[in-house]
Length: 344
Image 1 (cartoon, rainbow, N blue to C red):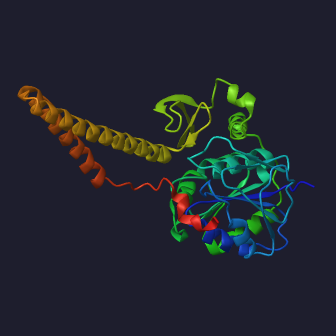
Image 2: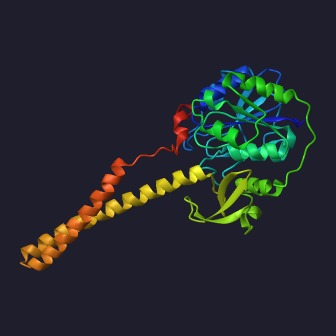
Image 3: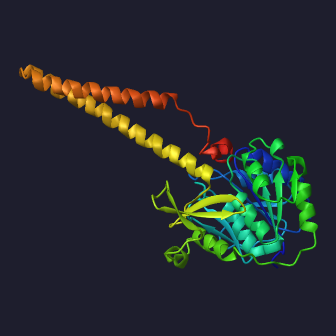
């Protein structure tokens, strides 16, 4: 029988320690399933189910497509697959990345909000940037419960801080109290389900994450077209805004928050600069070779022309090289590597 409640937990950098502490303290009689997304690299199997299974008496498994969700079970997202809950069943999909992650916390939260309404309990733990905020908003929009780790208690406070700033959380507690807050939320009487004016947009976003053909073929997208382009595919980004929290999604489905968009643009700028540096280095070498050949032939004016081109290319390359060596990035784009130990 489908549980009326579901617990969905999202974490990123520092998440292995945090998740281990949470599942260790969950009661054996927890009357709801638990689904977990931790941002991990996509190219190797995750050991997180094994790690968590050693910390709790609840059964922990890697999420499998088509499996019916059971209370008292913990389902962990697999690398490179979005974890989606739908009609009491788990779905795995290799849909567009959200905030450059797959699996993504927001995809899980959004699907839980749609499938369980006021029975959804969203939990945001440690992590960089602002993953989980949009999904937690969706859970609150449909009457669910939001639990957030106290940012001052988190190893990486950005994720919980963003959630606290943009979502009216029902509980903001240190890590040691998260499990108790979950148990208390599961035990609450289930409030009446309520619709949200954003339900159609949430459904569309869920279908995009699921790679639904009809949804991908629709020309319209939630939000309004922005002047920005998607760093992953170059398409136009649509801007979505709810209660002051802005994010972007392109036509094929890539989704980014402003912080992630800035970080992705930084990457694109750096890639362009390295390409320019390579081209200028090649230009200076070629000009040097052509100049030397002309000087051997006695064509002094031609040799000087190539030598001037060599000097100009080297000067421009030096400017770019100095910029690249002095620039620094404050935004950890690939923060999942902070928890690379969950991978074999």
